[in-house]
Image (cartoon, rainbow, N blue to C red; front, side, top):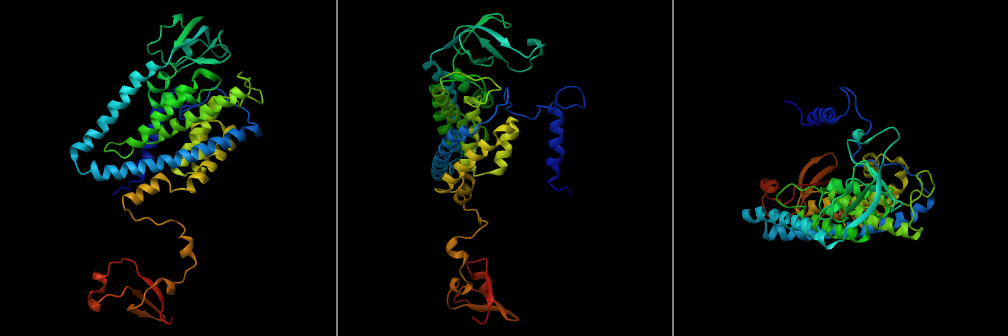
Length: 393
């Protein structure tokens, strides 16, 4: 017999070897970093002001997300779960609606264009060395422009890939018309400034907030990690755009002490705050966010936003996963008892008419009083836990 705990220890290293890049036996430095930024930034004490705002938004939205998901799951348990065909039809309806929105909604947004763009590559490298996306430097803007932007129905890019070329793209399609992980990459991108506008981020926030609330708990396996990161990244980038507007609208050099004024930086902080507002994780979530971004400089802002969102959400409701346990009537005990019962004695908790089951020294076990004979007490009492208290009370 092999313990199930050994399977993760076997499969995780195996998947790591499969994911490793480069020559045999050698691992890439960034092989396990999911959303590595283009460059690291220096933080400043002033970053805590917008970070606090992001934390408040994360706590409020995390609470609303939990309330909405619990309400939907209660409705689902009453009207959807009893029917097999309804359980099958519900995720199909969600899939059709999300696909329809992803295909047609970006048409409501105008195409954006940049001119005379050339690849911004490290010295000594060319496009053949780039296995992933890269960035352009354009004459029409001081910000970088990603090569992974979605053209959608806009005009074709004019010019050679090596530049100069004219780029047109749809900012909402770059978030909604792609996979969730690619959208997170776009939100976390740094140095891109106004590449994604207010309207695209706000629309994406609403669609994914409603869609994730509805999809979580359906008959199919639908995780919440990527949607939570994406939702938090949307409002985090909106706050970042507001800070960028307040600072004059120009991006700062990477080595500048003001380089933290970047929408991509606040998108990462926002992702952690919403994740914390829903799950109520603290230190472990901080470590996760730092690991997936590989930016230790943002450790304190990420931790600060997570703590604020957790405090606000804890004031109103349990975490989503705790609430789902209660919804499914699963026995669950908190690590700490309620304050009203924490300092209560056994005598104040038990009722009158106790039956004595056994006697060992000065301690006996008691439970509720019923009219059954002593021989059938254990099988008839509705409780499964009995309190042992001293007999001389």
